[in-house]
Image (cartoon, rainbow, N blue to C red):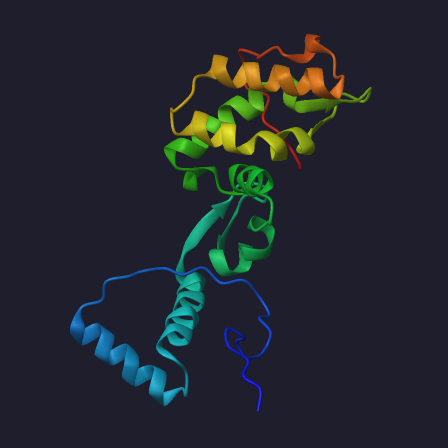
Length: 181
């Protein structure tokens, strides 16, 4: 007989999950375990389901539509696999939910000409490849680990590598809030 040491068996994973550590009051944990048993779920599956249900109760103003919605209804319009796109969607649709770090990044993103391609009709579109490649640095700026000037150097280096004109490395003094992604 052959042995398969180190080889794990099991089904394929349908989606990537995040591991979150939470503290629960012993009574609440016990009640959650009972509810999970009743629904024939694991405790983690029950907690995930409970969070999904509670999102239906959290109301926010959808700034792009000017109406109130719950977070469950907005989930698809707020989520993106790309961190920069997620931030833009949140800033456009629910700016009141931005934390301090996100507000810092958003203000700079919105004001910085270097991050956009401009078109004859006056519209502008993000240079997503730039944002994706330098997102770690944008997050460092949001966390106040680097300055706007430091980030400017990184963007300048990106422009040199890609052949983009350095004349676009200007930061506008007035925000020009973006209408779309």
